[in-house]
Image 1 (tube, rainbow, N blue to C red):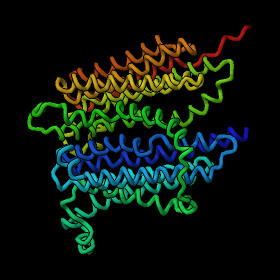
Image 2 (image 1 turned 90 degrees about the vertical axis):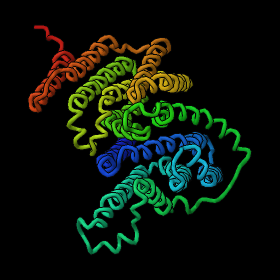
Image 3 (image 1 turned 180 degrees about the horizontal axis):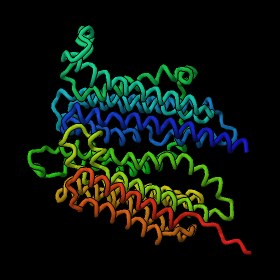
Image 4 (image 1 turned 45 degrees about the vertical axis):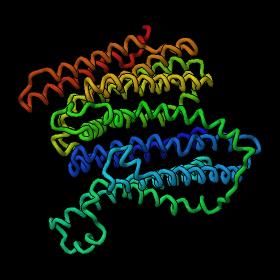
Length: 502
C-alpha cells in the first residue's frame, strides 16, 4: 500500500506540473497570433518541428538506457551517472558544434531563409545541447524519487520562458512605441532590437533553458568525466531501437509541417506564401491541445494502473471499461470544441488570416482521439513484453504519414496534412486492436464505440452545413447538440444496478 501510495503521489506531481506547464505554453498562442503574421509564425512552427526530431537524435535513447542499467543488480549508480553524462556531453558538444558550424548553409540552402536568420539555427543548436546534457540529471532525480524537484525546475523553466516572451514580444515593443511606461524607454532601448521580431521566441527559450544549469547545479557538481568503452556497446545496443521508435513517432507527430512547406505548390492559396500556410496550419493545430491535455492527464494516471491490475483475473473487463469511458469523454471533447471552434478562435487566433484553417480542427481532434485510443489499446504488448510490436506500428504510421502527405498536400493543401494525421492514428489504433485480439484478447465494445463516434462525427458535420446565420441561434443549436450528445451517453451508458429479487 505504501509503494502504491507513493507512486500515485509522484504521478500526481508529474502530471499536474506537466499539464499546467503545457497550459501556460498554450496560452502563448494568442500572443503569437496577434503579434506575428502567419508567415512569421510559420518559421516558429517549422523550426520547432525540426527540434522535436533533433532532440531524439541528441539523446539517442540514453535517458531510458540509464534507467535500465541503473536498476541492474549491483549497479554503481554514481559511476554510471558520470559515464552516461560524459557520453552525452561529448555527443552534444559535437552535434551542437556541427550545427553551429553549418548554420549558414543550413539556413540559406536548406531552409531557404534569409542569411540574417542564421542566428536562429545557432540558438536552437544551443537549446538542444542544453536539453540533452540536462536529460541525465533529470533522469537521476526521477530515479531518486525526487519528483517535486523535477516538477519545480521544469515549471520554473516554463515560467521564465513565458515571462521573457511577454517582456520581449509585448512590453518592449509597446514601451518603445510610447503606449505606456515612458520611463522604461531607456532600458528597452538598451536590451530590445525590433528587427529581431519572432526571433525572441527562440531567444527566450534559450535563456530559460540555460537556467537549467544553475538549477541543477547540485546534480552537476558531483559529476566526474568518465568514459567506459566496455559499457558503451551494450548501452548503445539497448538505446538505438528506442531512438528509432522515437524518430518514427516524431514523423507521425510533426513531419507534416516541414513537408507542407516543400510539397505545397507555390500559389496553392492565392496571395499566400507556403510559409503562411505552415503558420496557419501550426496555429490551428494548437486546438488539438484540448484533446492532448486530457489524454496526457489520463496517461499519467492510467499507465501505472494498467500494470498494477495486470495480474487481476478481471483485468480484461476493467481495461475494456476504461477504454469505453475514455473514448466517450474524448468524443464529447471532439463535439464540444468542433461545434464552438469559432468562439475559441476569437480568443486564440489574433488575426483573421489564421482562421482560414479552422476546417482542419475537427480532423485533428479526431486524429488525437484515435491516438489516445491507441495508447489504451497498446496495453497488450506492454503487459506481454512484446513491445517490438509498438515499433512496427510506429514505423507503419510513419510510412503512411509520408506517403499520404506526398499525395494529398498538392491536392488539398493543409487539409491534406490534417486528413493524413487522422488516417495515420486511425490505422495505428486499428492495427493495435487487431493484433491485441490475437495475442491478449480484451472484450472491447468496438461496435458500440464505433456507433458513438459516428454519431459524434455526424453531429459535427451537420452543424457545419446547417444554415445558421444568426449568432445566438447558432450558439443555441450548438449547445443543444452538445447537451444532446452528453445526455444520450449518460442515459444509455450509465451503470445500472441489477434488480434485487423480492
